[in-house]
Length: 242
Image (cartoon, rainbow, N blue to C red; front, side):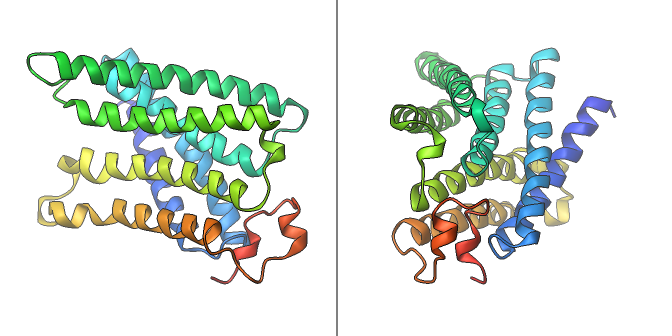
């Protein structure tokens, strides 16, 4: 097996495992924070290596390259939401906005091209994945533009800050989970290659994301610490023990 592919697969496996640990752990506790950092490094490695392989080896580059970049972007902005990079925060936000604008344009362009093509497919893929994830990228663009107009990530407090962190990290995780359990189902042993069962792991991520978004936006914790909500280093600690 090629080294680049081995790194991509290993990083993806570590990212998925650490992601589930972070989902299951008490939010804000040591296990959640440490597994979250492992998740960030693993996902960045997996996503950027996947995009590089797609471009260098012509492995469905129109689909895999922008999806890899989108995944890396979501992880990075999910991290910088709770850990702003100091004085360079605005420059980083602007740079990441430019990246996601390019990804949005690429995915939507290919999506509409597939719709207009006689075969209705590109690299064996229909238009739906391009358009769905293009819309995800567009949603992220809108959020970034609003944030920059408001003064950057440092202006976020309480529920909006947590919601931004949650949906971006979980969406990146969801992309990885769908890519592995369904996109790479052929590598899973036949006895357990049951499509309804393979859908369950990604659905766990989706349901968990929706639950926590509801929790922080609609039903914030009554036991929230004023110190935490005022911008402490651990903005997820208010949901400890739940």
